[in-house]
Length: 154
Image (cartoon, rainbow, N blue to C red):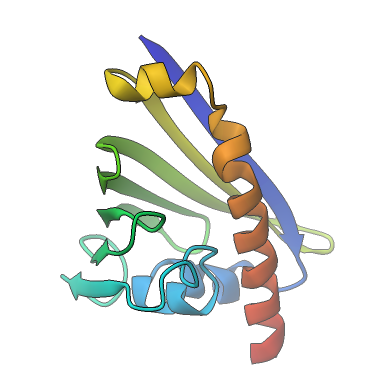
């Protein structure tokens, strides 16, 4: 079985707590997620608490947005958020995803990491497509938008 890990980091000139608050609540993702603009008619639903462990988000969109759910499994304020990301369309996959927030001299280093296994059809797909190339740019865009979002709040 083949596994993958995609990770991107960015230093955001803000305290970890400010950035953490925008990630620990899926309702805040509307402001910075790189995928929010893909399908203007995407349907979203939220369940569980507004933020933190047990918060859940589901989406259904066009072919590019796909469908799936995310649930926060661990939230250590303001240093780490671990979530379960499950895609149901276009391909089924479960991808553990982690955000870490590390104080540095210039602000906070935010690292976004997604891991997974390539099995079944996705294994064949991955012979022709690299996951890092597939989502790495989206992570970079999301981190830049997260930085912009924090700057607008200041």
